[in-house]
Image (cartoon, rainbow, N blue to C red):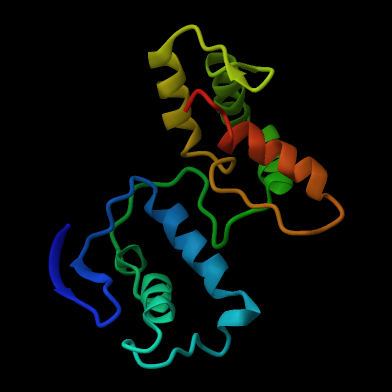
Length: 163
């Protein structure tokens, strides 16, 4: 990223490109955040010099470079919004290839007593890279009656000390 100028509040203004390998997940995350009532009808901010944080966040959310990418990788599990982790696991369990990605991740990036117990770093990295393409990666846990189970699934994927 190359710095182009400075905003009044001290935030650098960058010319950026969408640099993630999971463009469709990034776009789903942006749509999920944009759908929150807080951002409806729009995210209103004071002048950039008065409220730079709000303006920075609004620009990040509504003018994100990944939001404008039209040519994307083929996504084996396309989504419009981020699924809950309960739903992601349920979807994944219905397809042998998907659940194998999740099981491989747990096998090659083993955790016991909150410590990484992996045996092969390359296999763990490969399993993590492959899991990123599944619905399990990027799932969320809103506050609802299934939150405890959801949080447990989320932790397996996102709080693994091996990655």
